[in-house]
Image (cartoon, rainbow, N blue to C red; front, side, top):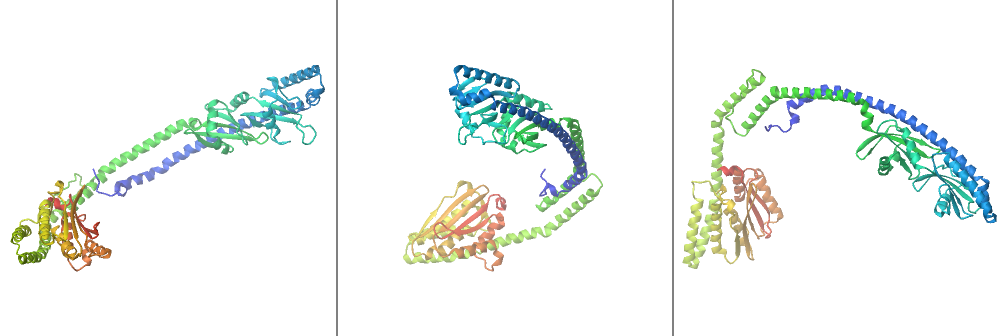
Length: 581
């Protein structure tokens, strides 16, 4: 049912429902506030517990690394290592072997003392070897040596990221400015141990944790899935600061807490899916939804009752007024209840009855006056062609061309027979175009050498359109009289037809130059606003007749022709009033 209103928002029903919603909205907002308050408290408690766990983890890790650092600097002072680095060339093979064995035993002892140590390597430039707990003596690792040597002397950085692993280094300088270091002690931390140690900060099911070096690319999660999240969201995770933050990854929202160790320049963080955070509030959420559903049902019942008792009777009354505005006066509306709408319906029926009485006295009289006006407008066209007809006949008689006089009088008889018929105000477009074509044939007898005519065939789908008589021939006559006859060179007249959905168009154009652009604009202004001008030209006559029959969409349009002269387009609405005449 299409309501005769512009917008549902302007209806009484919409206002009443809105009023009810305004009343119940504060209650719903209070429920939302309580839910958010509970959620924030749960998030705060979760963050407090998690931050304590993260801080303890960083403390334990720092103490473990401090111990490793102490052992690392003890290695710098190891006699066997310093002897190898300084007096290698002077040592016998037995001495070399003895020193190396003692050194490897000490390195192995240090490695087994901490699960965080994966390997201890010593890069000794003097002997061109790299000593390793895992692979004993190997070729000098130039790449690693060069990288760690580039670290600034006395750097505050305890951990260094290299090849996706964390390292601790200690450098033994030669004591001579500009010389290469005697050796570099490199402790490689075990990522597997670091990964497993992160599990101790996962306090809740579904939580994940990771280590992140703030000034390098090192990042390590407690499992491979966490590593993938780190790779995809590294930038966003670096921007997270402190506790109780949020970030989104793969369309999923996470609660994240992050602790930072300035001494290690390392962050440890724990993040948990938001649905896990909200899980303790599931029962509260269920009751909140039940309350919201009950409120929605109440709104629905209120809306239905308001619609049946108020909106539907009012809508019927508004639709009846709309039908009355469209001209339908055979309306009687009924209301079964003796309420305010019953009274309004009764008064509406009485008003319709009075209108039906007045219609015969007023409306029909106006229709008769309008029809008489159309007759008068039509009759104004006839004298124009009569003068030109006698002029052509006079010219032919002077030449003594009896055959052409006979042909001309025959066509002239057909012409006047069409325009003097009083039985019909409207004709088929095919008859109107046949009459106009007859006119151009008459004019060819006079201007066959000076004026060329291109008269297209009328499309089949336009032949049966009903139009007022004499709407095309006067426009063709104007083209001859005011333009083509005055041309010093050859003239051109073209009549064409167009059609589209809901509209048919007849286009008449010439190559004359009697009007400039200002004149064409003024002529179009006269057609659009006829009340501003006193005169009534033939063109304005035709425009008004078509507009009266076919509505505001019908009439004439004036523009510059592609031939260089004037272009007149007759627009006929196919669903206008003229369809029914």
